Length: 403
Ligand SMILES: *Cc1c(COP(=O)(O)O)cnc(C)c1O
Image 1 (spheres, helix red, strand yellow):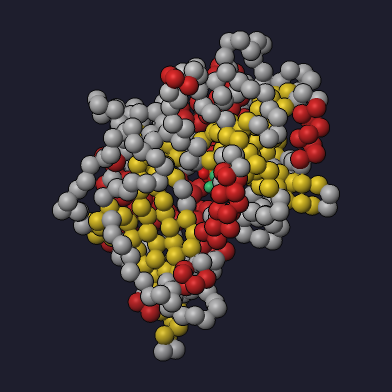
Image 2 (tube, rainbow, N blue to C red; image 1 turned 180 degrees about the vertical axis):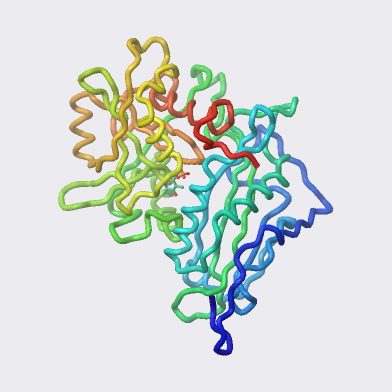
């Protein structure tokens, strides 16, 4: 509600029934599946809507040809980084239906990012309805094989974005915003290894981590638990330095007294698999203390393990006998604790998880055992189940949502 000339006016919520679809007269074609590096290509259309209290609230939503956005140079998003986003993927089911993975979690997280930036609120279920329409419109952009069938590991990355558009240099909240959603066809995060590299088929190259505590990604009371654009750009310099030194990613640490607390792997949640004395396996990730991004992949892995410790047994290679049970824990982790477990030979695997990579094995820096497949058996088993659910081969509690 807003006050206008002393009268209360009800502002318009997002209304999916007002969606206007304008198709491009010049549709493009999907690039070859062999050249789909992450986040380079975009599909033909975008979803866009704007919020302006003077214009009555949320505009009628539009799906229209992908195009530039023109903004006042004073816009809040340029001056004060009022910008947040989500990352989700549309997969093709075995019956060629586009599927989103637990999209209501992305909508809830976007709403919390928007609230943290004091941007205008929006109706999460209305936005999800529109995103499904966009994905359906952009269906042909989900990569597939020559027979038109699903290609495992390929998907259409969906990037909802909200920016503050108030034109004012005044330091304060933006009461105007643009919400848009763009799509980018993406191939497997890990490129296939060439036969000349002498690795087994399906080898996934472990990422080499540089531990960093002089730059801090997130801190208590900060914004690390939200997907705000301003959380990422300060890490680019650090990431470039890491690459120059021959590392792939950063292991973000935070000094707390004499301890270094483990936070995240680049923009992925951190997991460690530990061998227990009884032969079973503990899977540990740091708790959501406000410095950790509440990942959908992270939550799903914890829930899958908690629902059934033997769930992953069938995915382990038959060489691990008897097949171990998995137990999940959310526990603060420090570097000295990891070092201690390492010297007790308890660390089986370390991996990062997130929508883009799903599960990425970690090698070097913290010494972890090497596996012939690159990825260890625990990470591989988790990766397989998550992908089976995302790609609709296994039904799990309605997590894969059709468009
Ligand atoms: C997006 C993100 C993740 C992973 O979240 P998912 O919902 O699983 O994709 C983890 N850490 C950071 C910092 C992120 O931005």
